[in-house]
Length: 325
Image (cartoon, rainbow, N blue to C red; front, side, top):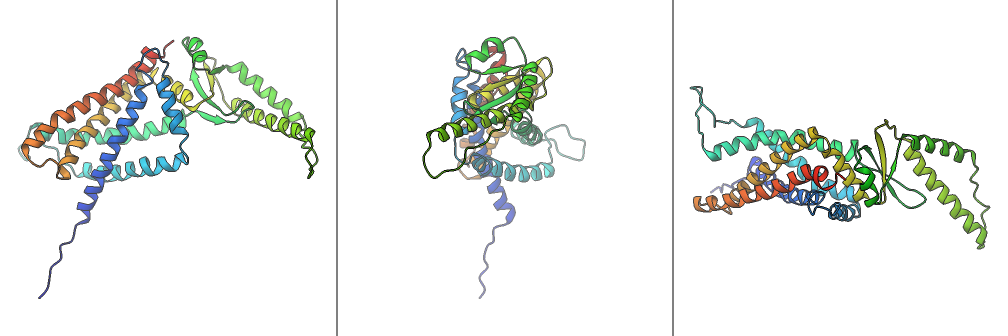
């Protein structure tokens, strides 16, 4: 007598993994939008909540490893399987051509928008990461006064009053030229360390501290001198990463075009997340009856409204309302 064993298909397993990664990314999206909204909400607070949260996150040990494991890998796994499903999808919520059915139901339309939003997210996330993490990301450098974070900005009159409140220093094109001259003078100075000794010599301690401070200042000037500025551009030098990222966010949403693109990106992400959360509950057997599924729709819509509000507030209020002056 032979006993047949049931095997679980790889497609079933990957659908479950895709669902779990999506749920994890929904939680991350909520935290991300909540953090970003603090650059805009609590008007008059100069985004201090945003600064505190970013400073806390930037102090996490091995941050790049944590981001890769907790965000990068789930995102890639969800995206790869999602693209495969999007390519296989056959949307039929529009008019029929006589060869395919037309099923213009609300859940069928949601299925179509889920697939369309996945393509927006694919390209939007690539652009978002490229801009925020590489192209426009603040640069960290040591200085004689501690770590500093440099951000290139297009100048506007609001920076006259905003920069002092955020404790950021602004450097213009002539300052970059001065930094290059200062570097040339430092190169001409011989920074010789005192002779080594196995005994404590107070003069040596002072000399080494002076050399170390000079080297740190040289590193700062080198980083500052590496910027190429137009007449309408400045470099903001901040003491904390949170302040630098706040200025970067403000700079991004100062452009109406970028604000419009991010609006589409955020709305697509929110719909994809909230509709995906609803299907996640079905996939894992948490809402199987028609009544429970219908009851969960208002919760998904409420999530969609709250997350959309947080995301759109960050986009349209960071510069235009809260941090313009």
